[in-house]
Image 1 (cartoon, rainbow, N blue to C red):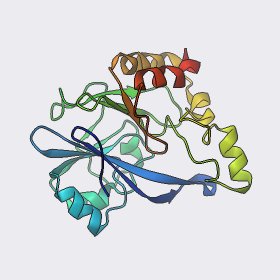
Image 2: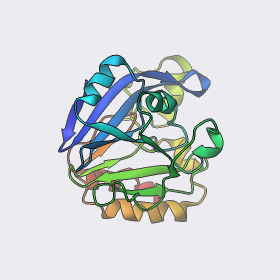
Image 3: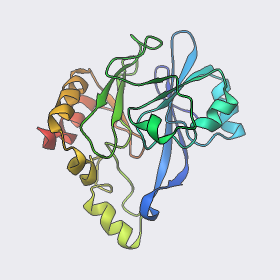
Length: 229
């Protein structure tokens, strides 16, 4: 269930979830174990008894992370299971989920709880969502959420298959969907964030919806965001 993706980092693929216009997406959660054995849980997926047992076997859940304003569905389920865990939101989510008492808003600098172990930056300037991109130095992994996507070519059918192809969601490699490219109305802010992302010594890249990149991550990011320059 938990798949190791490097030193102290795991991925967990969950069930599909429905979004706008009847589109469905696969789900993926990422867990990073910090030096004190606490767990940084990125974009929590549906919590099952089996998943909870597996997670408890590697550490103590202490941080629940909503990396953009679109990934928040299961936060409260996890918080009920782990009431001592702190919940951190991407910019813009507090207004959307007033039912959740967040412990803080993610910014361009890492929180003191995970500073020196995880870096981060807000990819600002997008009208759809402000996404917080993370870097885990120990595994040389950059973590995107929705800014990079790749579904199998047969994942959708009918008109949705045509729209997904046009949107670059079913390309032969993870791409920034066209809708997100068009939504970057303040490209100068996005370029500032990208500059920091490109400074990270990335070898691997993870995303919520797409095939993980396991080598030459820095070159991959350079190519994936070449349109932004």
